[in-house]
Length: 122
Length: 257
Picture (cartoon, chains in turn red, yellow):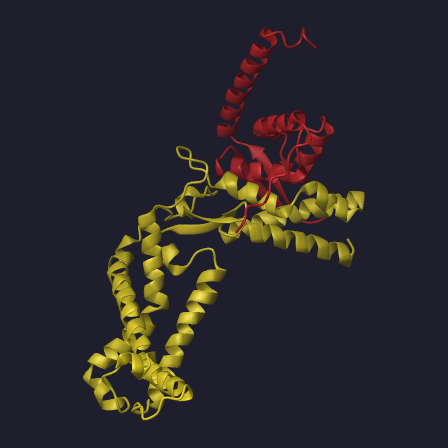
């Protein structure tokens, strides 16, 4: 069976931006569910409202499933939703450890970029 | 939500489910339920079903992304493939289950004294060879050959046996094995068939991250395979033998001399 053709990006920046968002989406989700327990749609809405941090709404659920499978978040169903049951996510201790390490890594990268003069050249 | 919107969402979720084939059924239900809630809430808010479904993404890509993120051992490549030995074991087991009865039962009947007592006029010949002789006789007569020796009649019991065995083989290989993400052979060897970018990939069950981790994922089932692999080899040899024997009667007498 033939592979689905990958559409060519409109320009290099769009592709780079998408990859960047995909790369840090775990960190963003872990940071969100650390403050309060949230369900999928609420997480998507939060990320969109904070500057369109996601490449597509459907990209959040694969990450949530993986975080759950890795034990970085715990999940529980609740019947309170108006449109159906909601699955609420909450960060675990392992998730906090991972998030702290990821933040450190992020800050290292950001600091290195600043050292390279990223801010001054804009 | 209107009936039309409900139908659109259901169709979308069916496409997602199709792409999730290979993941544990409980997980697939869980994912579909969660996405349905998301879509329903957003449609209730915005009211534009087409736009909501479009924003959510292509269902095949969403499913593929979920599967790809789930099939990723911590210390291995992103999508591991099952070893050739394991895949051969699964295939041999399916040969035994699907084709085994068709090959072994007539052979066993031929060699048993019971077959000599109950079968038709030619109990020494397996039913497939008897049938092929009849078809070949009809075929060669239609081509104009005369004076061919008429094959002995096939007992009604042999016809029924042949029909049942053939039906089982077709049912197992064409329906049971093809329509599921894990055949019996794959289950025994701990394999799963998943779909990534439209390609079906065979992976080990233990390489699919699950939460909670299911009991017995790492349990070996090789003790079941110990008889399956040699019997599978025997079945393949019998299959070659019967094919060869069934071709013989079709060769015209002029060629046979």
